[in-house]
Length: 286
Image 1 (tube, rainbow, N blue to C red):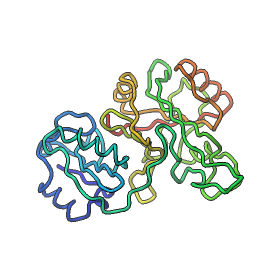
Image 2 (image 1 turned 90 degrees about the horizontal axis):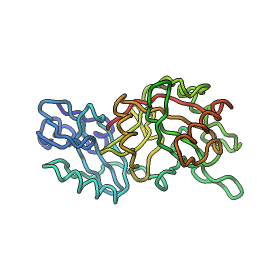
Image 3 (image 1 turned 60 degrees about the vertical axis):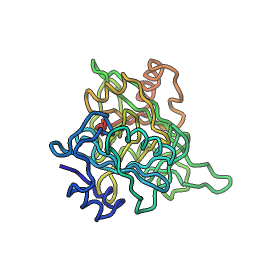
């Protein structure tokens, strides 16, 4: 009952993928790489999750209900830590060589370069603004009487369309083209954007925001250079509804707020100015 996505197959090769599906290298029992609970690949749908570093890759297993089969790019040092953690369960990980070039891991912890198609130029000529990076804040947002786990995304500078050198900030318009909505009232929970967007959690940590890939499936839109710790309350709220609200604002709209009540005030002000976009993203993993 093993699931191997096309992205994982492309990394490990057809022969290894077929061997896994035939049961040659897949363990009957494993510890889920997402929720850390026991799994049984013979009796329940099981996902293959490939953690890819700079030179090597580690294949792990997860309940399909927790996380879909996919490739998760990670820093090489993080990968070593993941190997140690996953290897605590019997046969929980199978080392494998990455068969394709590994994408560059974005710069530091909570601020990462925005991947295409919503992006600033990767390098800027002298005298022009440097690429924008994203700041991501986790918090609990009350919509009506319901608490929702939320991410507030704010770039450090204007975000233009790929190839544009005009310097115009089109961050929100790029998101609305993907189905995100301009929020007029934060008390109203937003609708979901286009299929393919999701929030990736693995081993209880926040790894990435995924967007639809041009080749099918999903690709990282935002990725943490180092998996982000979240509070137990945030994780419980996300798991309770299996979804997370992603809010987005242009650079300089909210800034860093030390408390959730101050963050909510800033979000309400942004909504009143028409500068807050949002979408309800399904949760991948726990």
